[in-house]
Image (cartoon, rainbow, N blue to C red; front, side, top):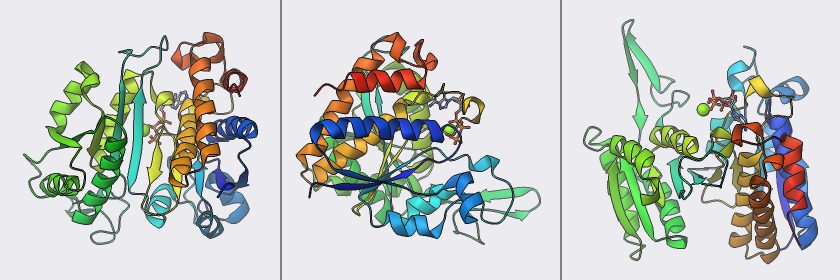
Length: 356
Ligand code: ATP
Ligand code: MG
């Protein structure tokens, strides 16, 4: 297989700037390697509400199922009008394609305001379980209120879900330093986190060359600030992963530096930056496109590995070269990472440095 079909889902607010930026860069790199990509823009988010009567049109889900992967821009669902069809597409996409593993790397680059200059770790966050108020778990919701003064929030952990995300993390660990850290709180959540940890060790039996250790989440939060170099691949449950990946982003320049790739067992993957739609800076050309671009690069690399597609691997390598070079020059960096440029300057900087 040589041609790839990829969906473009802009999302909301800065999504309309950072997704086209990621596509432009990928196109430029793919032109150089002769990688054939069939790009398919699909409706989602606020614009889709106007054109299709839903922020998550059925037709988008059906089309995506036939693609190799897609790029999803941030979704500003909290600002959606309270009308029919205005729903949060995130949980639907993750469930529909069983994207249970959210791979979120944290990497230092020089001079952009990183707390340490040698961080290189990946947190794999479970994506479809945990505390999910939008899940149909109990009485129509993952949260319920038996009396006016008591609220119960349900956290779901399953053996299968834990085993799946652990396996994804172990595969990644095997390709990296063969070390996996399981982050949990089984001292308190004896059943839930207990099951998660158990399944991580069981999954590890299939990866005898990967060393597994475990750290309690609060201790990990402290170590992550003091000694992030101690970690390579980390796996954890949904909400711990949500919080810890923002903490990790804070160590390397902030939310604009936090990419992500959502994976499942299926053939499809979703590139999705960790940050939100940042309505405060939307439309101004100021957003840092790194997270979206790097998420897209990860998707191309993943497809290259999965399909043994050397052109895709070369494309990802060119993108990496362009990104590293652009980040090294303040003129081709955005203001949030100590740059003097804007989004377009960064895109141009990356494209000019792809090499060939
Ligand atoms: P969510 O709940 O969707 O995660 P959030 O409330 O965490 O959203 P974000 O939109 O992620 O909020 O970002 C918070 C702030 O961080 C933004 O308002 C913006 O100022 C800044 N920010 C986020 N992403 C970027 C980016 N790519 N470039 C520059 N600044 C950003
Ligand atoms: Mg957030």
